[in-house]
Length: 300
Ligand SMILES: Nc1ncnc2c1ncn2[C@@H]1O[C@H](COP(=O)(O)OP(=O)(O)OP(=O)(O)O)[C@@H](O)[C@H]1O
Ligand SMILES: [Mg+2]
Image (cartoon, rainbow, N blue to C red; front, side, top):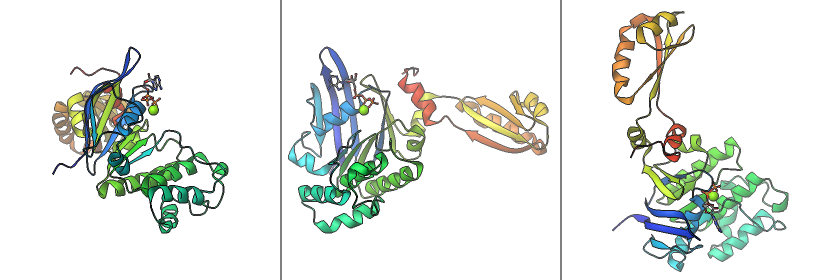
């Protein structure tokens, strides 16, 4: 049996004469975490709304566990965290979750552990109207978890969260994925996604311009790698001239090399023996790759 949670084939969305999503194909397997990146207006939210059946598609097809978007079978297995989470301001967090639990057919007993899991136990009996943005975001996450989804669509889920909360948030996402849920996260927070996504999908003006693991994208982009050499004593002038790099300060030398030249450079650095104290190899970051693909500098 296939493990595909989501299969999108040649999907198109038109707004008047403009295609906001063009010929887009993407597959999400069970347990996969895929980052959906793209500039403002690239089509991330539109794509998520298409998957949910909230907006009609004008071409191609989308299958959510074999069902059409918006179909009851698809809806039951899918959770959605929107960009701007809206709740009843006059309800307490606990009351709001009770309401959601009733709608999802879940027993009351799930609520307290869930509040605890997203770090809202203390605030749970205060009205949501008095909560901070990050707290509301956590409640959104609790709502996502409530339905035990097999597919989670998270639209900029960490935008209101502080660094600790982001950390907790990703720990929960990892647990979800480990349990077999396919997770699609749209985000502008590249650094935090770098280590966490199995695949990176980049949208540019409604087109998918990249869909691959970070390693493969690095290979494809062929962006330079930085080698930072720390010299043993104040030898950076001498080391820089022998390696052909740039002197950073009295103990640092920076070399920029293409991916194929990296090993040769490392060999030459090793030959310097006692002159060198340490070397850091800094591959292109997701931010570098994003700039490369999302702004159309790639040659493919
Ligand atoms: N209801 C709508 N009516 C007309 N055009 C729309 C509508 N919703 C979105 N668009 C257009 O579709 C394009 C994609 O918008 P979308 O909201 O999907 O972008 P996004 O990638 O989510 O951006 P952001 O990072 O700002 O959230 C934009 O050009 C936008 O103006
Ligand atoms: Mg959006």
